[in-house]
Image (tube, rainbow, N blue to C red):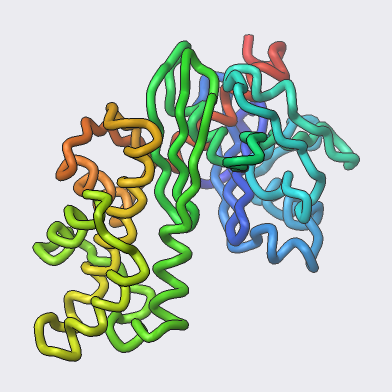
Length: 308
């Protein structure tokens, strides 16, 4: 969307590890302009955060008096300015109270992440809390799943995050297909676009909780060597095994309850299909849109006068 001279209430920024997205937003939640790029936290560690933000603000046509609200890895310890984690239980509608102001011209703030400070089960997330804020209604209770490199399962009671679990599903898929013996069994970097019989079969076995993960991983290779499986099914088998193990772990912790799934594209379709196959009631929302809506809610809490 091209920039225009329309008035803006604020600029919303979702700043990830390897990506940047920004919207110039009207007070009613309408995006007036959009800009995105590959300048994530890793890029900015050497290039700097302020110059990248300024370049995108110019693309958006945002004037200096328009405030900026950022979520994601720009607030990490190794990011622009650390926005300390809020501890569970933490009310999502008060997330903006933890926003940290950046020492640059104008009003630029970064939202905090969430930490579960249990020494027996420590957990953190940064960016996903804003997506959840944009996805749920006031007083929501339930379970949210956000698949990805590090999939998150988040328990919410009456609008407060009370617990979370992280599964390194996406990262394990990448590492396993690139740096283990399974490079010979799976085409690196692939995911089955559509769930297949091989995916469903392996998913069910892994989700039963009776599969030993490391042993099952090796059997993927052994099955092909002995002629029981084809390499073409390798990605589906590995995906079913990892996603099924993830869902088994989440089910063990939280039980089988309705899930709000925040995802999009092929990965979102894969998780939705998997959850429904395993008997979950699923409601899916687009992850990019929920991030923008969450930033909108938080911004309205900070700059109330701009949303009247």
